[in-house]
Picture 1: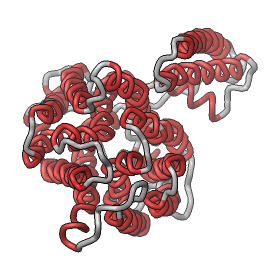
Picture 2: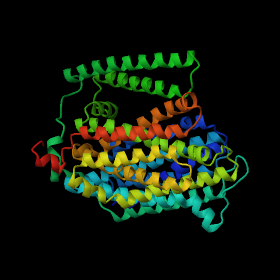
Picture 3: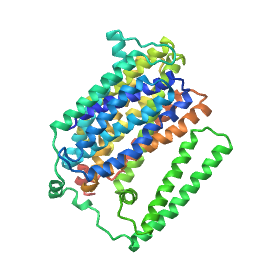
Length: 498
């Protein structure tokens, strides 16, 4: 059931470890990289809830979630073949957008797949199995350029503006693995039909009441409130945009203000539709369900925000931080730079290997403590790992930093989803798993908007400080996880709080 995640993570790992390198090779400055990366989280923000919404309502010969696995895998494989052959920076940025959208189409239903097929007591282990395959896939994919260079003699150097062969062949191999792994899940797994899921009665206590008809007072009242709040948000975003432009501030800040404007306008449109009696459509349903998400999901949203802000800081700045802070170069054509970039791939492989190894220890730790405490311990390990990079001068010691990151990564990929699944209505599992991705992508958009400006204006262009900020953010996320109301946690049940 989870084997396809091996392939999905091949795509993500190649993207995370090499796209900044590709952007720099094609001429991007360090402070421009976050803006170029904005395609990835923005695409997930749009795609995942839509895919989740429609996969909840899909039933074909291939099942409910599996058609989306397959379509996304085909498109992502094509994008992986194109990315390392990008002739210009703008082509690479567009390809990243397509690639990330396709990976999200495949990935989002996998989360709901586990929620659909497993009872509450098995979900922590089920999501841990996904973490295991994610770790295994990322180990190999992240290290591919290094392995191809050092084991098979493929060149990791190229002329200015040209992607090295080691990176190109890594993407070709990754595309093939992506497609084959997802095909394995598509053709060897099964799904329960909507009728079977309803018969199980899982999460019956969370089923939403079927309210009212379009044009009724609850819809009219909700519509008026959404229009009011949407106009306020739109006004705030517009004022911030004016301030950023009039003062000539960094253009990356426009991502932040633009996000506020877009969210405000979406709520205005949803409110107007409800006030006009047109409430029974997919768009209004998505916006209303977003507002009415379970309390556990709201609490987890804050934890996810700071966790993924830290991860995004790591993904976009580790290459620049390691090559400049430890290898002492910013020349993308130099051997030192490419050796450092290859070593970053190995380090990313190391944290993925650690996550695969500890994935099944997390359910044990959660049973002995609680899922919240287990998540806290793991995130603190990750935060300390990121902070330690600042104090390292020997690149070999980066592996120790990645041990902490790997422990956090294993928990981030499993524990929040296990806590979330028990709080969701079964008939909206896919949609809410997609909405949960908001709290992965929004912090990445915030990071893209602010980190480049902060690194350039506050930290004097030294990217290693972005990793310090990320480490602090991850520790804060761990502390906030103690506030989550984990409805299915056995320890909560034992002390009578459920």
